[in-house]
Amino acid sequence: MAEKDGISSAERCGCVAEARAEALEGQALIPENYRRASFETFHLPQDNPAAQRGLADVMLAVRGFTRSFPDKDKPGLLLIGPPGTGKTHLAVAALRLLLDRGHEGIFFDYQNLLDKIRAGYSETLGTSNREAYRVALETEILLLDDLGAHRVTDWVEDTVTAIVTHRYNHKKTLIATTNLDLEGHTTLRERVGERAESRLFGMCRVIRMPGVNDYRIAHRN
Image (cartoon, rainbow, N blue to C red; front, top):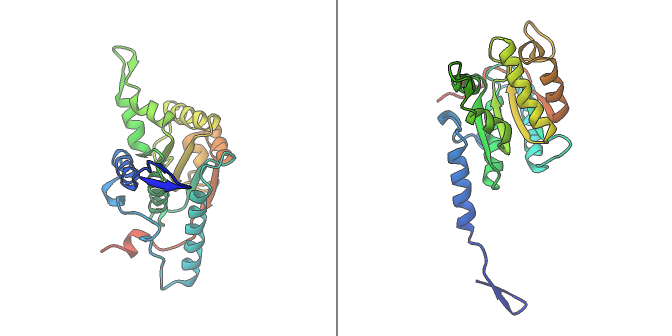
């Protein structure tokens, strides 16, 4: 019980919020390798001042995204950079911080999500188990890791466009990581299609990772 101005009232126990945050994280399907990912456990390189400054700026930008959440103008976050630069760690750190505040979210590896949606389809029945697809559309925060890491087919492009467009139209948060950019041997547009790419850049704060040595190799135990 709490008392203010002589009036007693029930005060919600902090353990309730803590229990909810734990439940939300348990439901978020965060891979074991990233269960402890946080801004505090994101190690900046000590032997490369330029990389240290670059990654520190990126980390501050991702933290800024969580501080201003939810941002209706730019509800999403897109981290672009080569493999091993810490994109997934920072994306999960942002997700876990928002889960801790009571928001709902879920982690999907891009290819795994597509496989789940495809596996639910039955050509015999002509119907689909749409649970994975429904979650990708409707969950408050969707973290999509390694966006574009799948061979291009009409089905893939249509599915990704439908998910991104729905979240764009309804101002739902999408946190995504990708190794692909606007230019290069293989571009993001080639993997997800022009419409999905346009909506991604329209709804997301875009953060490009600096050129650094493989983060996972540098910080392995």
